[in-house]
Length: 169
Length: 202
Image (cartoon, rainbow over all chains, first blue to last red; front, side, top):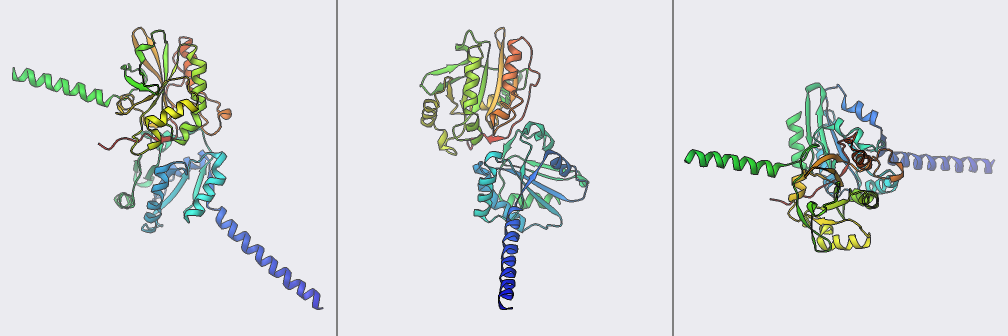
């Protein structure tokens, strides 16, 4: 009687440990999601009355890395019911898993990052904005329901971000 | 007389304005330029009297996307230099922002990578502005038509930055192949993700 119960206690303990570990890893791995061209197009065509902020960046892009903390601050000051931030990484697929994961972990970024799976960039750059030549960082603000479309092809700081968002809400 | 001076002034300023704003589109005529190569010699397009055209690539030592294309740019010159379409590489970044793009660093890169093409330093950024280059790498294929140099293709080198072997659209190569056959490129303009050219603060 003694041994089985100890066994059960041990098993329960192990199961709990495993559950906690898997939950933690799931929470972490959720940070990097994949986004296809079709999914991007569907977001760009979202008819709901919501301001979308899509930010294009990569860990290899110096100005992007400098700019990200500004976005983190702007998110904190924004009403998540009204503004939907989305971070699309253009990291190279061969390096993304390693570089992007460790980068996000190191900086404690809590926002979700989507890695683009369509690397034929020419096939979708114009869908984001006709004037975009493809340099990053780049940010698109839009609300289809209100015919709002604003593209920023240069780095932004928190004040600029908050101001732009306020003016478009 | 005053009116004439005024009109002349307006015409001149319009001319200067358009010169400064010149951002080439496909079909535009390219003005020649003179820039210093990593061997300290000046290079201009008109020096290449037997060239049928050029592959002009705005690139950079420091941009990770440009680095990905380094060997592909070299291959383009190996293949098309022999067919009278040599590569002319130009670095235009403000070195105050990117010290890795200084002339000395360009010299080191040209040597270590064994570049067989000129790697020109666009210190004033005038040539990047003249072309309307915005990214690195940003390529322009130009072809000689009589005495004029005409823009035939603007954009990406191919459609796979990360892995050259996965590129199934080799835009620059295809454009030059078409031009060698006397035809305009089927895809005259593309866009690519890249590093923005670092402009000097005016």
